[in-house]
Image 1: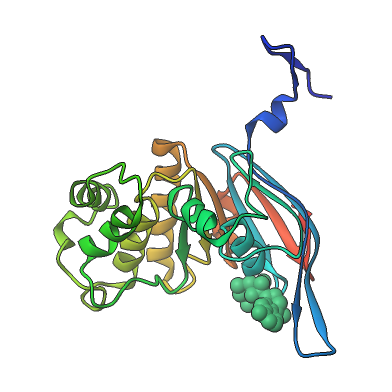
Image 2 (image 1 turned 90 degrees about the vertical axis):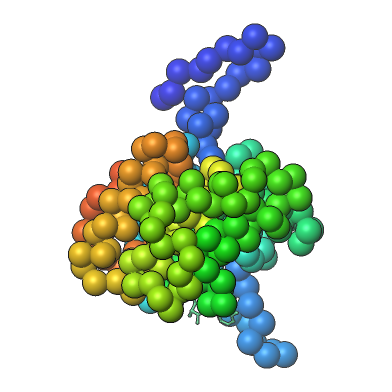
Length: 243
Ligand SMILES: Nc1ncnc2c1ncn2[C@@H]1O[C@H](COP(=O)(O)OP(=O)(O)OP(=O)(O)O)[C@@H](O)[C@H]1O
Ligand SMILES: [Mg+2]
């Protein structure tokens, strides 16, 4: 039983819930396959991540990992249930507000990097900063700082095809961090890299988590990566299990 903290305004706060940065409550996801058939991908998923945690999400192919991550990251909406990011329920937001949450609060890193091929590393990282309405950072200055942080200050003007897989993923990580998100989500971010590059990228993520106080959730098939996270959850047929 967690002790209760009495706040000055007399509200009773459970310290565990006060720390939660991601709170997924009973989400389901159904998709229509055709006029008669629908498929339930998520069957009432509950998932909580505290600030500063690094969590691995594992599970068989087709079990619903990407679907869940997409819903947490505001790329998709649940059929029912709630998703709180930083205590804000994002499950019912309109597309415009959701786009803002995506751009400012969540950083996303994918298996195939998803960089814009016609833009340089610097321009790729500048993009979400320029896109942000508030423009809290100077795009070029901030992008250079971030590329330095991921060890790529010597590759600012290279396009993705001129970079190795590991380097492209570093650019993608710098881009994901552009607007200082609270949460970094990775969908098999090392899935397309050899084991040495995978380890380097994982090390980088762990280091950034420490230095920036980030919260990190990684979908991975790699048991080595899962072992290096604080804890692991397993998706199986659209249900999430602890451990
Ligand atoms: N829009 C969609 N329409 C129909 N089926 C879908 C849709 N999106 C996902 N699915 C199905 O839902 C299931 C879960 O998909 P999801 O991509 O979340 O799995 P995953 O755990 O990420 O798998 P993998 O490890 O292969 O990436 C799969 O069976 C997939 O075919
Ligand atoms: Mg997937």
